[in-house]
Length: 76
Image (cartoon, rainbow, N blue to C red; front, side, top):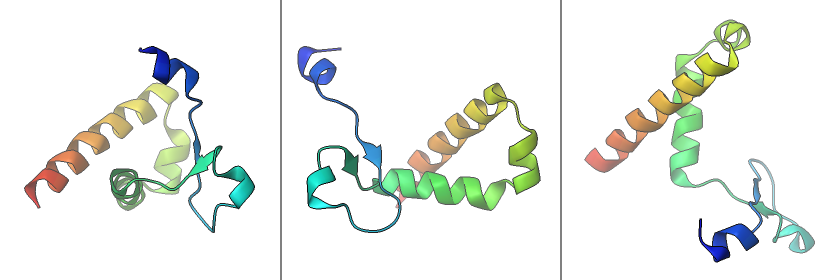
């Protein structure tokens, strides 16, 4: 990781509402890819499935979702 990335604090994603002026250095809006991944996950997992998954299963599902969404976005 280069020095710029080490010094740059990762911002939290603001999914709803407007980011207040005094929090612009702490929050950011989701990228188009992040929105598509969230939609994919919501459409393909029930709450029960989500609740029953282990951390590893959730990570694996999220990685699969990222790959699928990236391919879908590249095709369009």
